[in-house]
Image (tube, rainbow, N blue to C red):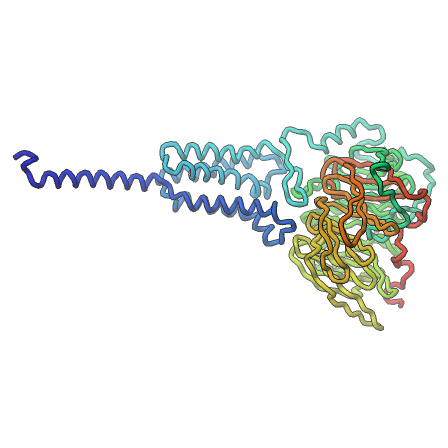
Length: 632
């Protein structure tokens, strides 16, 4: 019987065709990846990265999500590949082991600045995302997709072996350069080796002037970080506001080592700190030329991925010498004329703690014969330490918050003098004599506090980083009791490490990375406009003027106008990221960052002698005018 004569032949042929068709469909299901979970992960990674660009002052939760979320999602991508991608078993095993092997190998080859957390933030998301992107685009091409995915993953992982990290901006944007490119520090050290003024590893003087010259706090124009009262005010001066016809004039500019110190000033001497390779250095510069008069170096190097290398604190001028704190805890008292060591201590030993993530950062406070520092010991009495200014002996130690980027701050309330300490636990007002607590305001945060408390009459403003905002507390004293009450807490001024100032009832500073003005009475924003990055500000209270140094190194003259943002002049003053505080002495402005320092002459409305004999604001009561705690 022929096929045409067999009634079952057509049915058998059709069954065979259906079987072949089902086999082909099954094969398609097996070889075409379920790509959409990986695509969702990539979209989420992109959204987290984008959030750091569009959110001005990201809160801690968003910051941690943006930092750690992409790496976590990369883990989800690899779980998808292993268990839910529909790839064959052999393909899954080769892909998983290949990505791991590439990641391990390229991580071992990273520059030291890219290891650890930097690899988690940048290398892993890039390498795994590249692997997933190819698999999504080639989901139905089983013959070539894995080879292409592993190749692009190797590129994504390996590109980071070619770069080095210099830190991040105030917006947490990473600053990279090619691995083989010399860093500003390396270029500075090469130039330093040829300078006759210094010799490596020693202290010597090439100072001009009489070695018998006396430098004291009373004879110093700018004795402390942010000025004698640490409030960022420079009274007695009024700048010409037409910078088109009277622009700032560059007097000198010179390279400097990494560090986030500011300057203190005594006569024609500038004091600051810097990193010199494996040594930290306290340096004295000529205010006239910027040349090094002396430098004291000691073995210590501090580096962390956010701010890079170098000390963070600013030297303080005292009657017994120059006092400095290195990022690893070296406390020094030096002769201000020669740089010779008078005494040295180890804060790690005396406080019983290691440096915090960002290094020891407190600029020493010299008061009543003591040198007072915040260390941050988590247990015991060692968070705030007071040394004898003459001998370096520990006079007292007390407990406080276990971390802070702030320095001890002098203050007076109702004729009672003491010191304010802002930490992660809140704000303490301590006795200078023995460190005992006069009053305490609890405001605990998980993140850091990095700006000085701002005293306004009988109240204090406390700024907190990462979107938490600012609080004003009122201080009342009746007999032996103190009443501390919250006036307001607001997020219209969200400083990070950028100090603010107060003028005629309004606070001027940085809300995230945008310059702003808020009403000191209510905390409500008045205006927000100046896009200066994460810079710093100096107030001229007699002129109602603000000198702003932007994160990009611009010098900006702004009117302290409560109604609107008025920019009077702007120049590019420094190259590179600038987080350091400016210093103004008469008509000379001293600036620095982690790469260079400079002096500019600013035109004054009247001669440079105008009421400039004091740098303490007329509205500020100094500790010497007050009664020490316990003697009122």
